[in-house]
Structures are given as C-alpha cells and as structure tokens.
Image (cartoon, one colour):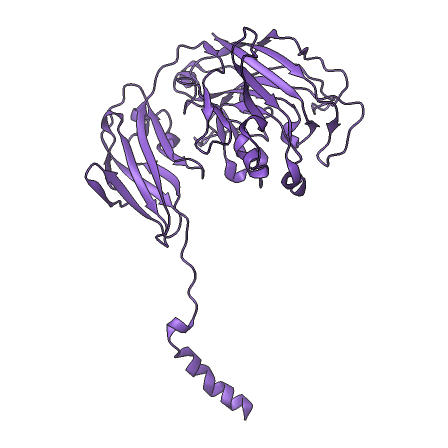
Length: 403
C-alpha cells in the first residue's frame, strides 16, 4: 500500500510549480577574462600573432595592445570573454550602449575605449579601459632609478613607475600578495618600499626586505615574503594557490644586453629558516639580482612567458647575468655560510656580464621575439619561502648596456 502511494505521488511532484524549486543564485562577478582583436594579417600590425589576444588577470582594468610603430589602426572587431552571465556596455561621450562580440571599435589615434561590465545579478559593475598604442622604439641602453613611486589606489603599498622601459611602464613585486596575508600592515611594513634619502648619493632608492607573513602565512605554509622587484606580471589571483606561476617575468626587448651594472648594499637577517619555519644552522641569507634574455615564442608560434618555476632554467633562455652564488654538482642551489656575491652593508657598484649560451637572431630581436627580465630579491631562496626575516637589499642606479 505504501509503495503504491509513493508511485502515485511521484508524478505529482513533477507538476509542482517551478517556484517551489530553489533557483541557483546569479553570478556576482563582473570581470573581463580575455580580450582578442581580429585582423586578417596580424604581422602587418603586431609583432606576433599572439599579440592579438590577452588573458586578463583579476586586478587589471587597464588593457593595452602594442602595435608596430608604423601601423595604422582604425575600426577593429573586438571580442571580450567575461565572467558567466555578465553584460558588457561600450561607454561613449553620449552614454553607453550594449556591446556585442565582434562589433567594430574605433581605436584610431590611440583612443582609450571604455567598457562597463555588469554582473549577472546586476548588483556589481566594473569599468575597463582598452587601448591600442604604437610602439616606441627603444634606444637600447637603459638607465633606471627608483625615485618615481606612489601608493597604489588602495593606499596600502607602494608601486614604482618605469616609463618607456617596460610594456606597461611599471615595476612589479609581491606587495599585492603580502596584502592578502597581512592586510593590517602599513605601507612601510611591506616587503618592497622606498628608502627615502638612503641612496648612494643621498637620493631615494629601493629597499627590499624579507618579512614575516603572520598567522595567515603560517596557516598556508608561506611564512616569509622576500622583498622583490621585477618587470612582467604579478597575478595576485594565484599568489596563494600557485605562487611560482603567479610571478611572470619579462617584457619584449629589441636589443642584446651585454653588461648589467647596479649599486647594491645588503643587511643580513640573523636566522635563516626553511619553509617549515625551522632555523637552519650553518646557512646565511643572500640577496639576488639577475638579467635574463629569453625567446618568447615556441616552435608552434605560441607565446612563452617564464615564471618563478623556470626563469633561471628554461631552455628558452639565451642570455643570463647574475650575482654569483654557490651551486651543487647537479646545478641546484647550495645553501652556505660563505657567500661569494660580495654584497656588503656598504654601497658598491656591481658589474655583471651577460653570458650567452645561444646566438641571438637579429631579425627575431628586431621583431620583439625576445623578452628581457630584470629581477631583484632580498632572499635568493624567497621563491621557496626560505630566508631570514629582516634581510634587506638596497638598490639604485641600474645601467644596462646593449650591443
């Protein structure tokens, strides 16, 4: 009897109003995940085919494509991949209108085109700027100081400008990741900060310091944060889940570097610790500084961007200049109590030659087929969350000489 009743009831359940079934909540995200531009002959306008598409990290709202210096740009079809359910509007002087993928957008005269992305639940929106800029030919030799800096929009940490040198005109570091682990920190408590009046000539310079990441860092087994500075991309969305991949090194460069000069001084933290936070006897902390030139395209024409896992070991590397360190017979890093890099607490200019293991192709170089990396760290094992809290590296007056 019971079984018959249940069988009769089952079809009735199917006839219940849909309102009785709880709906899945609408998406609250309003991000652009990727941007692509369609052109019939990409190499007539861009340096590489892959330059027509960009994956956008979650913290970016200014999106820039770079063309050859002589390229003529006008109306181009644009495609945006956005978070599920989001709606896009093209914002103009007379208001905004719905944007549909494949629509022509006027990028002439290096216009900045504005887009508003609205979440599926209509409660959130985000503004994006997309522009296509002409490349500015580099003169080759670089001269860089660290006196152009400001607080980021949140007011939590400092950022440094490097105009006309890197793709987006800005240095990168791990400060955004440190903000996640220690949100209560003041701007001067971050791993990468300005050192006001502390340069070799009494000017402002850069200070990198290995910091304790606090209770959150201990919980995720990332107890220290090495001060860092490099050109490329820091994907804060991967800062906790995949730190090595979050640090993406390098930007296109059209000259062959042969010598790297930089003024350095360092102060060593007292206790070197491993990733578990245990002191390691007989080991002292060391700073790091290096330049890398690598091929930014593979044999199939796909984009190559080195990250924290392979920036010093990738087969795409053609040239490398680095502060000297000890290495084991198998090439792995050797932790030691007798560093050989020579950085002391007194300012010194270091001259580091860039050594090549492969020939640089002049045509590929001219067409931005190589990326340049300039990188510094207060703890050379910081990528593996090893080092000494309190280790400091002061940096100023970079000179990169090219062939």
